[in-house]
Image (cartoon, rainbow, N blue to C red; front, side, top):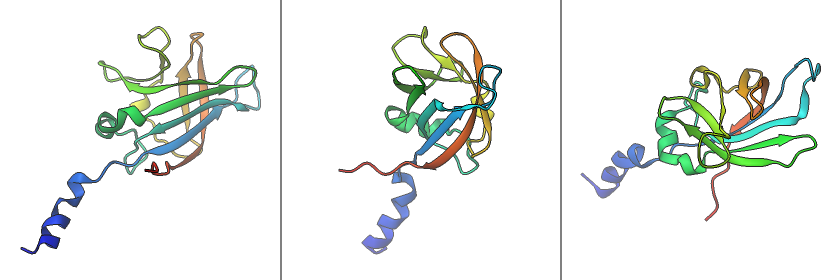
Length: 142
């Protein structure tokens, strides 16, 4: 077998899983009847071809799976997308579980524009968020 053929046979195993940049904005709630574009989350996460979170890819790239919470009138919060021991997904902003924001059934959600995701925030209130953008994350320079 020629060296070129040997290299190409290993390519699928060494390919890094790609990440997506996802933007979610507050959907309609009693407090925000029209929703709010200036309240939401931006996250970096690995998605499978159907738009579901890919837990295997997350394990390989967890350090790159970040979240930014933006909220009108408040400072942005920066954290990580985590997959807990009990196989639940959450946003975490500091070590420990006190600040974790669990996402209801995130393993079954499809991250496609127009879909909705519910997040239980710091104040214990579960709020709906609309997925407004999903795009490939640009490759890191270097």
